[in-house]
Image (cartoon, rainbow, N blue to C red; front, side, top):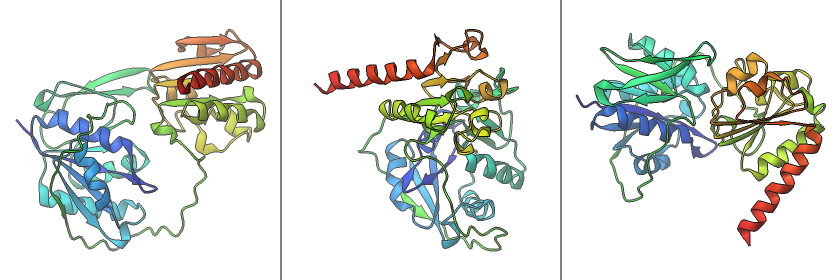
Amino acid sequence: MSKKVLVLGETREGALRNVSLEAVAAAKQISGGGEVVGVLLGDSVQSFASEMIQYGADRIVTVEHANLKQYTSDGYSQGFMAVYEQESPEAIVFGHTALGKDLSPKIASKLSSGLISDVTAIEGEDDDAVFIRPIYSGKAFEKVKSKEGLLFVTIRPNNISTLEKDESRTGDVSSVEADIKDLRTIIAEVVRKSTEGVDMSEAKVVVAGGRGVRSAEGFEPLQELANLLGGAIGASRGACDADYCDYSLQIGQTGKVITPDLYIGVGISGAIQHMAGMSNSKIIVAINKDPEAEIFKVADYGIVGDLFEVIPLMIEEVKKLKAKKVS
């Protein structure tokens, strides 16, 4: 049976997050030929509507209000529920991001709905869709199927491919009036401590450093390598605890969970807590002078050596390859 699916589009720093486009692709798969409706919440979000449509959404519903300029669970839940009540969908898809992880349980509770969170793959489609999600900190996976009622899922970034962009696609863009009020939390100021450049949670390449980098300065060549590869920088908890970098870079069970195409772990021993955050990366490269380091057990490629010798050689080789492409 075809379904109408609502997809929450997330924006950040003037751009639509890629996970929102991945969510549209997931929604297409589970809709069974039904309608995919994008939902945009904010104070000026209509400009993002065409991009969601070009990547597969059939139409867009916006809710614009001054109290939606910054995310709060109260404000966004009011805005989303206004759209839900108008559309009466059979399914909802969010990204499994910081926002999605905070908002989805609140919405599910309001709707007395189940929630299938952190989905990394979908098998089948429509009523036969089976959702795969990691459990036990990524040590195992379970397959979940929704039997009845509203289907509500969140998808992990970088796991479900977006549909091909079609600039000729068009769709209706409408708005819903919602009185966003009685907010228990007001965002007075947002202070960003994350590094500039590629967002680690959506990066295709992540170069992560551990205690083996020895200092904050030891992260500089890692940042250079990440920049050359068009990737992001990350860190183990040990490196963060040692004040080599900010905790916003932490990868692990209590940090960020990432699934890049390429993960390069530098001077990281491979504690369980860290590997819970990166073990599902498509290709894992480990660089460590200890041949018995735990990270080698999950690595696709391992380099046993001094990182301060290996990383400069890698940087040199990447520069050579990029120079050949230019010439």
